[in-house]
Length: 68
Image 1 (cartoon, rainbow, N blue to C red):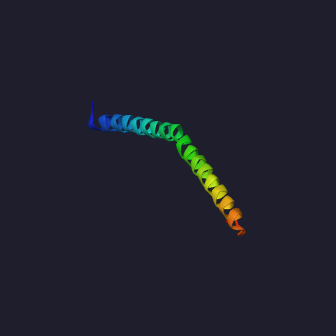
Image 2 (image 1 turned 90 degrees about the horizontal axis):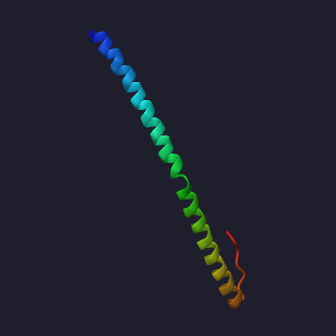
Image 3 (image 1 turned 30 degrees about the vertical axis):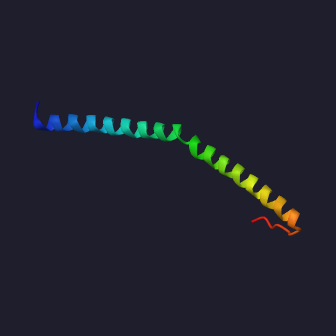
């Protein structure tokens, strides 16, 4: 096999390896995309509970509460 043939074969195999790596990375990103959504929902629920507690405390103190 000539040097040119070896270089061409190496380039083709390298292209397939890079393509496979990109597909694997995309699959990895897709599988883990739900974690930030779940964390954001938990954060919003916690801040909602915190706002409710502040609102109750302000009602007891007879002060108005302004939502941001």
